[in-house]
Image (spheres, helix red, strand yellow):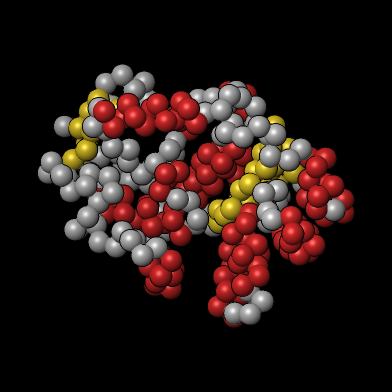
Length: 278
């Protein structure tokens, strides 16, 4: 039997963040001594997974349930859901290696990129090319380097923005998680309801102006082209974003059919994906 992989360093949650997670996630995993999302407290707290990155041999691992729990809460508090918590760079199979290297280089050179307020836009007009996965992996890699991040669907940011108009607690969440966080990850920009276009433009203007002014990076995924982004959100604010931004077109085949196939295979083999930072 193999020992568990060395737990990745993670920051403990404040009591306030833990209580907020409990209020927003009714089935939140709260006690690693009684339950575990990885080993399910079965077979003596062990689980089966691939022995190495070649994924040719299956091994049995001792489960560090407490470490898995802490990472789960850590990522969840940053907005990264359980599915993406379990995925790693080895799961990026459909994207050209050169594109993956460009995105990984942001994490490798994070100290300089973050200090410079370097923005990143991952775009593709085709769905399913892996933009959200790449954003999640990049944010996890930045968290390991002790950067505060927040990942959110664009529509969720809009909802939090409108809630902040009438609620002081929500306004504090807006400032902490969107306005002032070290690195903001915005997923699916461009899928907002068109009926709120004027309000959305004002919100985007507020976010980008504030974050560019503070040299705080914003990483965006979108199905819009750079030209469509400029037309949709105003040339001036997009010009601000572009001053310190790399636009990377994420090309490749739709990875979702392959992902479904792998998930089915893992279930048939009785494998359990551990929560991992890289």
